[in-house]
Image (cartoon, rainbow, N blue to C red):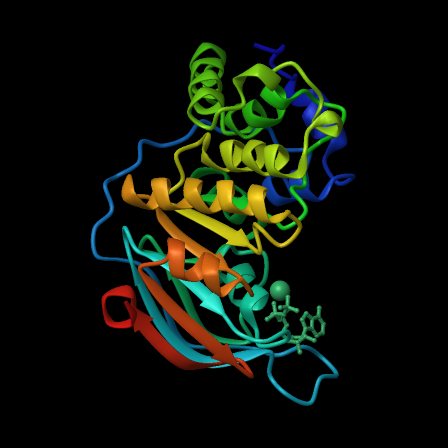
Length: 270
Ligand SMILES: Nc1ncnc2c1ncn2[C@@H]1O[C@H](COP(=O)(O)OP(=O)(O)OP(=O)(O)O)[C@@H](O)[C@H]1O
Ligand SMILES: [Mg+2]
């Protein structure tokens, strides 16, 4: 296992890397210890008449949208470019605020949270996987996975054990001490998925997770997401890839111009 990275080092890097900004928008505060997670049942995500508009744009990027996602669902969000898929994901991740309406995740009104509470919400509740991995290239694979656990205040031994377990489950333990630069795209995405899962998030969000991968690596990531869903992980996945949606999702919401054009459960489409 790699050396646990000092919080100071992680903090110094915050603001220079998109992934660290995701967890630590304000570097001057120390990480806090996680609370014990309550089991989640029923609706995990509730959007109520939610809209997002950007200054200067004539049309809304999203909504008004009313949508609920239950714990344990694997939801694929599809739709043409510009239809609001990433906007929706960013609202759920608390990376963006709605213009109007509400975003409730695990019983919390996300749009009302301040920066600190949002950073903590993302650390404790959300795992996010991006199209271009967003790994830190000067940290080893193990340290990349370990980092969010450390930021959440997980004791080092526990974080190291959790990291080993995930690397093994995802079949990348042999790269624990390697740097991401020498891994293939598919391997990097597996590291990113391990990192997203390290804090046992209630919700795994993925924006085009196979978008930058060749067919075979895309297939690996697809199978991994299917496994995670089978294991009970709630997933919201944005994708252009209809095969990915069909393989992984228990439900597919198709967006057109920021509105839900169709909402289908897998039982109905297969
Ligand atoms: N920061 C921004 N400022 C202004 N307009 C934006 C901004 N971000 C997104 N938009 C606009 O909002 C709309 C929805 O964008 P969004 O990124 O959610 O689409 P998408 O469905 O994820 O598209 P893609 O498949 O290309 O990733 C688009 O018209 C886009 O141009
Ligand atoms: Mg997008």
